[in-house]
Amino acid sequence: MRHLYIVLGDQLDPGAPLFDTFDPAQDRVWMAEVAEESTHVWSGKARIALFLSAMRHFADRLGQAGMPLHYVRLDDPNNQGTLAGQLAADIERLKPRQLVVCAPGDWRVLQDLKRTAAETGLPLDVREDPHFFCTVREFAAHAKGRRTLRLETFYREMRQRHGVLMQGEGDEPVGGRWNFDADNRASFGREGPGFLPPRISFEPDAITREVIALAEARFADHPGSLDRFDWPVTREQALQALHDFVTYRLAAFGPTQDAMWPGEPWLFHSWLSSSLNLKLLNPREVVAAAEAAYADGTAPLQSVEGFVRQILGWREYVRGIYWTRMPAYADHNAFDAHEDLPAWYWTGDTDMACLRDAISQTLDKGYAHHIQRLMVTGLFALLYGVEPRQVHAWYLAVYVDAVEWVELPNTLGMSQFADGGLMGSKPYVATGRYIDRMSPYCKGCRYDPALRSGEDACPFTTLYWDFLMRHEEMLSTNQRMSLQVRNLQRLDAEEKRAIRARAAEIRDCQPS
Ligand SMILES: Cc1cc2nc3c(=O)[nH]c(=O)nc-3n(C[C@H](O)[C@H](O)[C@H](O)COP(=O)(O)OP(=O)(O)OC[C@H]3O[C@@H](n4cnc5c(N)ncnc54)[C@H](O)[C@@H]3O)c2cc1C
Ligand code: SF4
Image (cartoon, rainbow, N blue to C red; front, top):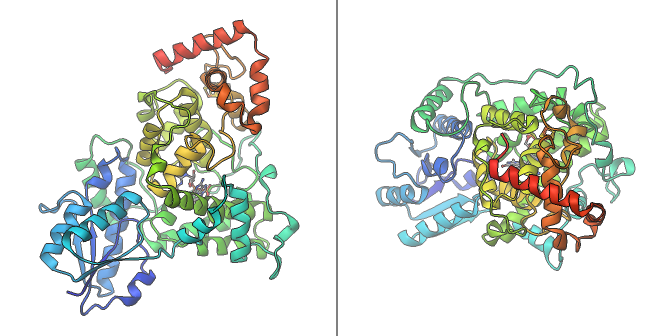
C-alpha cells in the first residue's frame, strides 16, 4: 500500500480536499473508534454516541463511494484502545509507505500522530485544515508583536479579508456598524420568549441505535442520558439543521442571544456547533447562509452580524489562540485557584435554581447555550475558586460539541480568566443580579440575588464580593475592573467579615 489516509473522528467532511490526492488503487482510508477518546475525560454519553454515530455514517458513505477503508470498531476484540496504539498496530499490518492526515484539531492528537510516525519510521504529511477561515499561520501573523489580543480587532480584520458583511469591495461594514453587541443583550422580560419554533429533531436510525446501545453498555457509569438523542449525525442532516436555523430562528437570534429561560434550552440558538466541529458543515457555508438571509430581507443585520461574529470571530479567534499557545496554555492558573469542582456539577443536584437547570439540561441533552456556560456554570466555578484544569475537564466531558481546541480557550481564557488576560480584557464576573436580569430563575430560587451575606444570600453574590476581596491587588491593576474594585472599597469591615464568613460556609458545605 502507498498511503494511509488518517481520518479522525472530528474530520467527517466527504468533500474534504484531503481526498483530492487519494488513489483508490493504491491508498486506503484509516479510521478508528478508540476508548481513550471517551475516557481521557469522563465523557458524557451523548458526546460519545454523537462521535461514534457520525463516524460510522461517514464510513458507510466512503464505502458506498468505493473508497478502500480500514475501520476499527470500538467493540473489535483487537481494538488497542488508544489512537497511537491502534495506528501503530495497523501500520504493522497494512505496511503503508506514508501517512497523510488533515491537521488535527487537538494538540494531544497531533503529538500522538507525530510520535507514532517517528516510531514506525514513516513520513507524516499533515495537510492544512480547510474548515477554518483563518490558518494558524495567519493567526500567528495577526498576533505577532501584540502584547494582548482582542477579538474585536481580529474580527474586523477577518470581515475585511473575507469580504463578509462589507459594503461592496470597500473597507466599510454593511450598515455602517461593526458591532451590535449593545443591542443584543435583551432578556425575555416577564412574558418569556413566547412562541418558539419547534426544534428540528433527527430520529436515531439503525446505526445510531446501535451506538447508543454500545455507549450504554460500555460507558454505563458515564454522565448524561441517551434517552432523547436526536443530534445531526450526517452532512445531510447538518444541512437541514442549518436550513432550519436560518429559516426559523436566525431573525430572532440577535437581540436575545444572552437571555435564559427555565426549561427552554434551545431558544433561538443554532445548535450547529457539533456539526461544525465534526466538519459536517463548513463555516463558510454557514456564514454565507446567514449573509444571504440578510440580503434577501429574511433576517435583520443585528441578528446576522451577531451570529457571524460568533463563527467568523470567536470560533476562529479561540482556535488561533489554542494553536499558537499550546501546550503551555493548558497550565495557566492566573488566580491560583485550587478548589475541587463541586460534586453536583455531575448531577445537577443543587438548590441554586439557575445552576440546577443549566446542569440538568447539560447532562440530559449535552447542550447549554453560551451564556449558560459563561455566566452560570463558568461564573460559579470562577467565583468559587475551582482549579481551572478541573473546570476544563468538566466542559470537555459534558457537551456534544466539546473538542479541546475550542473548549479550552473558552474555559480557561474567557470563562476562568486563567490566562491572566491574554484572551479577554477582564474577567467575566458578576453577582446573582446579572442572572436575575437575564432570566426569571431567581424568582423561583430559595436564595436572594440582592443579599451579600447570610443564609439567604445568593451564593453567586456572596462569592463575587469574596472573589473581589481575594484578588483585590491583582484586579486593581486592571482598568476595566476599577469600578468594581471601587465598589468593594466602599464596603465596611463588618460587611466584609460577614461576606468572608458566608463564603467560607459555602465552600465548606458546597451549597446544594
Ligand atoms: C466555558 C465555555 C466552554 C465552551 N466550550 C465549547 C466547546 O467545547 N465547543 C464549542 O463549539 N463551543 C464551546 N463554547 C462556545 C459556545 O458556548 C458554543 O459554541 C455554543 O453555545 C454552541 O451552541 P450553538 O451552536 O447553539 O451556538 P450559537 O449561539 O447558535 O452560536 C453560533 C455558533 O457560533 C460558534 N460560537 C459561538 N460562541 C463561540 C465561542 N465562544 N467560541 C467558539 N465558537 C463559538 C459556534 O460554532 C456556534 O455553533 C464554550 C463556551 C464557554 C463559555
Ligand atoms: S438567586 Fe442566585 S443561585 Fe438562585 S437563581 Fe438567582 S442567581 Fe441563581
